[in-house]
Length: 269
Length: 102
View 1 (cartoon, rainbow over the protein chains, first blue to last red):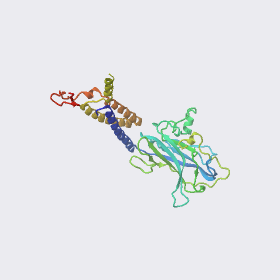
View 2 (view 1 turned 60 degrees about the vertical axis):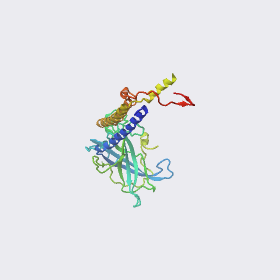
View 3 (view 1 turned 135 degrees about the vertical axis):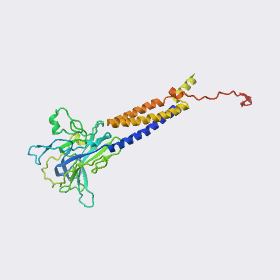
View 4 (view 1 turned 90 degrees about the vertical axis):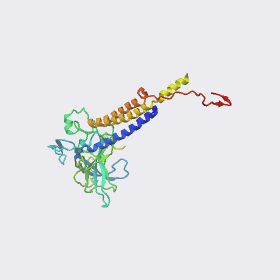
């Protein structure tokens, strides 16, 4: 420690040691932060169409278009649409507390949410196929803005109460916290195709909610369905089983994916 | 003149401190940085804001640098008492090319 240079090197050297231990402590501190995620996921509509799912598809193939409802939020009223769209929507009361906001602790930077459609392969020895239908990057309040972050669409409840000029730019509904997601009749971001080119009339499919918690410091964690210490497993977040319907004729309904900025948000270029 | 000036600049840049000062500097580094680390973690954890941890940690480290690196006067309070310089009386005679130099 006799000269300026040696002192600077010593201070910096010990600083790196301290920084390492503080970072390790932060990474470990999330273990005692309780988590109790829950969500409800319902299939709204599924259609199978034959065509070119992307502009760069070289051949016509069957592809599935999955619409879904996701409710990961504490709510008192939800909108329930009857199966046929001719009837007016009914408002029902529901007091379930469903949310992913406990995934956001002090060390969470963002949570990558995704919904997969899982269906068995044609060959019994092969593992089931999983395809992502929709995804979103939900930032925590401490994360800086980024163009790929998800922007939550206005929900019926909030849209009516707040003025329309006040456009929401948050990844969660107004007056809510990160981890609250309420999507009704959400279009998919991605259409599903199968390697065989055939997806119509395949059975036993489910929609599943998955996440990847990305912390500021520490390990990535994925969906867990089992309790582990203070971390409760995910409750719900899985749709009932459904079968892909037969191929639609020429007159297919609207099978577009989400458009505009939302389409590109969180997905690679 | 230029040599003396350069010597002064060199001394300031090197910033030598005495032995007791070196011991103090070592101890201060350890104590300051460890305290800063604990304090930054606790502040961030209690406020549930990781930015506090980051910026308090960096600010505390910057202060530690400021306190330790320059040769502050309190690092030089115990100068080494060297023995007085001795005259080379009856000691070595240096000869260069057969001539006595000293």
